[in-house]
Length: 310
Image 1 (tube, rainbow, N blue to C red):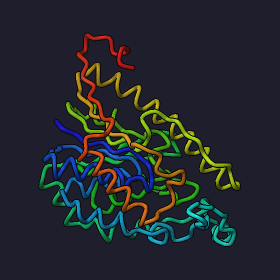
Image 2 (image 1 turned 180 degrees about the horizontal axis):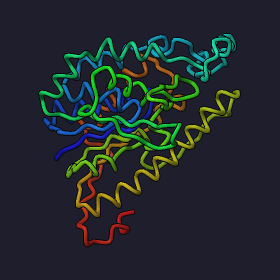
Image 3 (image 1 turned 120 degrees about the vertical axis):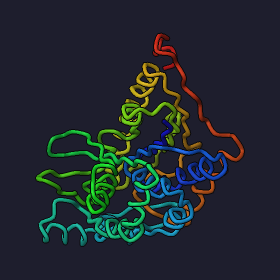
């Protein structure tokens, strides 16, 4: 079984879309299983449909207001540099409304339902495709995987939204007495689940540098500190995901093709700049066209020493 796995990465999902476009349209690859976390969860329903143009249009025209009903920060550009300020009024409004998060992302929930229709959901089932999104259950402190095979259209749209909510900047998803958030808090690159579902060949788009070497600018304020520490945490989770999945692939004789970003795209992945995202989509597409990507295949027989490749 062939699977496509896309990691979390916020606005960097545009780069993943470009890579996926090449894999599907130019390499003519076909997948039975699609697994995503966060921005990966937003991409995979359209990729399962083969509707590249629709998701490309979304990722290259989107703005902050399409995501946030209440945005907890303000974005300013000066001399090509991004400055993030705290939206004190918006945060106060959230507290007055007795909300648990600093921001509100219900606009994203509306965007999902407006663009991923019930007919789309039924078509995915008719095509015998399975899409799985990763969520973090903050009540039980467990990572959960939600399959299109197990839920109704309404419920599954909720799970896609939950998978994409980076709290406390975005909304909590409340379901059956539990509170859910971005799946990246527990499994940023959900390769292990694809393997456990029986995938034998996996294309994994990882929205991280293959070798993490960052030189971030000085921190600006409390919100910037939160974003930076979250990014640090997610990078550590990604490292663990890669190590564990490679060992699991070796044990199960699974081939994994990794596709990493080739440069640091942004240090603010929660900022959605349509001009930049259009550039990133093209970079993801061109990366594979020129074969300059740092993808590599892992294929180790069960009786080989799996640690030799790490």
